[in-house]
Image 1 (cartoon, rainbow, N blue to C red):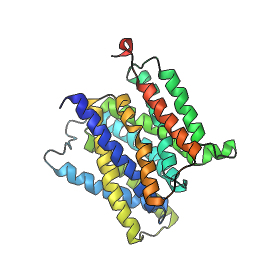
Image 2: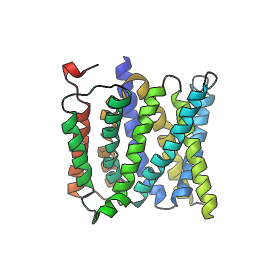
Image 3: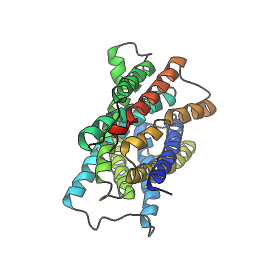
Amino acid sequence: MTRTTRGYLYALIATICGSLVYLFSKSALNEVSLPQFGFYWFLTAIFFNGLMALHPRGGFSVSAFTRADYRSLLLMGLIEIVATSSFYAAISISVNPAVPSFLRNLEYLFVTLLGIWLLSERFGNYAKAGALLTIAGAFIISSNFTSFDSLLTGTSGLMLVSTSFYAVRTTLAKKHIREISPVVLAINRAVFLLLFALAFMIAGGQSFAIPVSALGWIIAGSFIGPFLTSIFQYSALRYIEASRAAIVQSSTGLFVLIGAFLIFGNLPATLQIFGGIFTMGGVVLLMMRTGKDKV
């Protein structure tokens, strides 16, 4: 298997696992508060990632870390708090998890811009059209907002915050993926988010007792999400560019759409589905390369 094929395979696995995260987390968030969800979600994520780190071939190593590496982990951890909290808050308030999954494609627009700026990646002549199509799709998905304020504070606003910070995270991870292994990045992410959720639970006096059914969704989702998805996302970046991984991951919305219909029995509005297809098409255009544009 070539390095490129391996990278695409890892990106596809991450996409499928990531699709299930929307469904499992939505099921759990229907029963528990966001801080309770975050506490148990990332506690179990640390457990699963810790098991992998203990394996001889798990890839966990900090022996050669420099101060710059630790600063990078600190920065990415803080970015994850904003990005991930906004992400799950958007899922929590959304009627259908397919809507935030389509809006997640905005991340790939931001990854493109940051890839050009920070990683010197080159993009084809269709990039401008792709950017406009992605933005247009996002506005179509958000077509049910009643005012500019509701656009910024509802699901769309939360996903705008989330995707912009996730794009910074992805770009930083790509930049440092040779020095910091995927399992270290995944554990670092889970630790920061666990502490953040714990602080909110203590401050709000929330109970640590949650329904067994919600705990079941969290354990299953945490294994698939913060563990498998994070590992395969970061692993894909070892073999292919962040922009190429984004092409594969842009299909997440379709998987979530099918799953949401099977589990919750509902679908987004027809216009929102078209908006989701627009954003996916825009991502593909963003990543297309012509012969003279390839690196």
